[in-house]
Amino acid sequence: MNRLRELRKEMNLSTQEIANKLNVHYTSIQNWENGRRKIDIDKLKDLAKLYDVSLDYITCLTDDRENTQLEEEEKQLLNNYRELDTKSKTIVQEQINTLKKLL
Image (tube, rainbow, N blue to C red):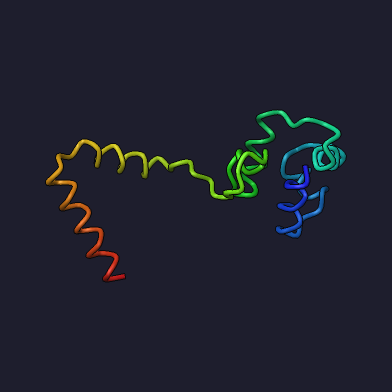
């Protein structure tokens, strides 16, 4: 997988350094990058977290690097927002716009 190599090189890390972070042998990293071995899902998740990208990006399902997973606080805010009526949602949006202008 060339994408793995690209991400590693962007971070200026060696295969040994990545291997140490994931508790695997450095040849595993080389094999994954060269497509000689498949990566188990747990290691894919670890790599996505390490490189701060989505699983879809690592597996070349998208070119969007962003990890679109919501943090717990974001999930709670979204759930609270969804419970509001239309008028309250409008007020929240206005308040957010006001805050953005102040920052």
